[in-house]
Amino acid sequence: ASVASTDKNIHILGVYRSPRENTRASVNVLSNILDYTQAHNKHLVLIGDINIDRMKKTTDNTILETELHTHNIKRLPLLATRITHDTATSIDCICTNIPEYNIDTVILQTGLSDHTAQICQINGYEISTLPQTSFKRQFSPTNLDYLKSLLMNKKWDTINLAPDADTAYDNFLEVLKLSLDIACPKKRSKRKTNKKTLCHDNETKHLKDIFLKALNKYEMTGNIQDKAVMVERKKNYDKKLRTLRQNANSHFIESAGNKSKAIWTVINNERKGQHKLPSQSGIIINDKVLNNPSEVAEHFNTFFSQVAETTLKLSNHKTAGNQDNNENDQSIVDKCQTVFNLSPTNYREVRAAIYSLLVEWMNIHLKL
Image (cartoon, rainbow, N blue to C red):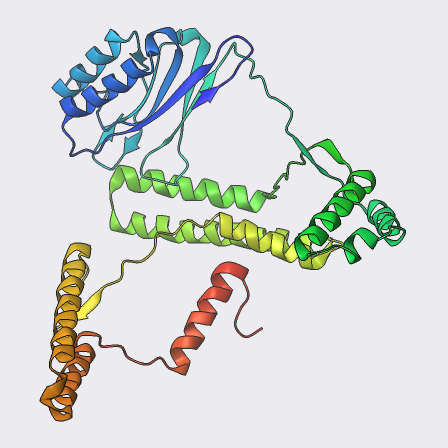
């Protein structure tokens, strides 16, 4: 990503390296990217989970820092970013070629992950933002009334007396476009930004603080009892946030003039925040569930190729008699029923599916 400032663009590069990946190969990939982007003549900030501990002098750390130095990039000294009851490692990185006195780094314990959060603030750069505008027609009640009066006073002879449908449509489109340009002209306007406000009271802050304290205690001790306390406080904190969000949505709907639009706004906002990976499906073949896509594809190819071959043989031997054909047809049907074992649904399964959709998307309990 590139962030424009009044002085110069700042390029931001996010990285992730799996702990099982070869360090030399990963660093070579990173070096190729830096060469391609010509990082030596750009202001660059490289942030991510590199899974190389800066706090230990290892071969992997030496390989990374040596390669960064060839591009005039330095890895900033961060405190431990992953803490457990027996380890403390700094495996996340903030690397840059910007002078260190222009950069402030902060480590935050948020409890959202087993890693801490890293904030990098670049000083001395003023971000230049362009005003967000749109160029579109203005459809207000006054403009629509004016458009209606224009269309009522139009003469439609060129449309009614047109020789064919295409000519009539073109004439109608021309009249409508001209009327729209007069009554509802296109204007440039600023886009409105929807600011989401989620009120946090003192109780929410208190629940968050005691949860983070329990998390820090569990990371230091590794005790099962401390883990149970941490999990319980995390549930209480999440429950409080969920209640605040529901109350904010209810207040937004109650205070809105157009309640139908407000309800759909809430629903769409909830949908945007959910990015769940689709569950992996499988197929039952000979009382065995196959989840591997390659194996499933191979089975389908084999099955349908055999069905096509059997059908072709049946069409070439119609003179053999209807009895033989019926037996072959029945064998194909039996084979399909054996492979595709599909069970019918029931009332309880449909009800459970509807309930999950109501609770997940609309926060509506089934009893309502």
